[in-house]
Amino acid sequence: MSNASSSKPKLNSKTFGKLLRLFNRNQTDPNMWSAIKALPNPDPILRKSGKTAQIYEEISRDSHVIAELRTLRSGMFAFNGELVPGAEDAQSMKSYELAKTFMAKKPHTNTEWADIDWHNYSAILNGFSVLHLGAYKKEAGYWLPSSIESWQGSRFAFDTDN
Image 1 (tube, rainbow, N blue to C red):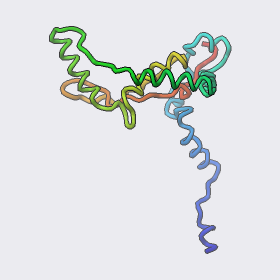
Image 2: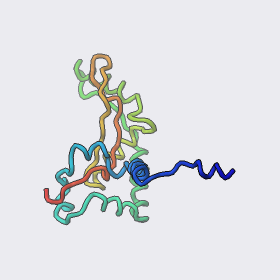
Image 3: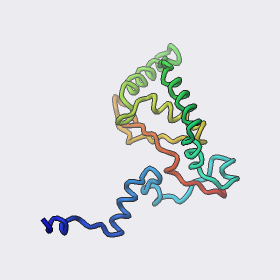
């Protein structure tokens, strides 16, 4: 039995660092960091104060704010949205059918369209919101994204000087 304890895998600091980065992926996207270092900050108030969008996340953890957000979210989810054609001409009807077919599928695994709506709506609370359009695939002669995924604002770094 004593051999069992000696056969446990050992983590060196390099491996532990890789695991830590894997689990903290929601804070930064390692694939993005290789391409860019920082983006211009779109929020003029944060830019002037030298803060990042994480301050919005800290505010949203307050219990009073959470209660208000739940009220807003439940009200938004109670709304019955409807997709309608923009006009009665052939091109509008064709676009309507394409949109109807596209929106009949879930935008991403374990995600509903109401979640995407909420993410877009939360741009008001966070200063911005980002949707990632998955790889495009050709369906019925049209190039459509294979998925639509919400990305947290904390994945992005902004330069306080821009």
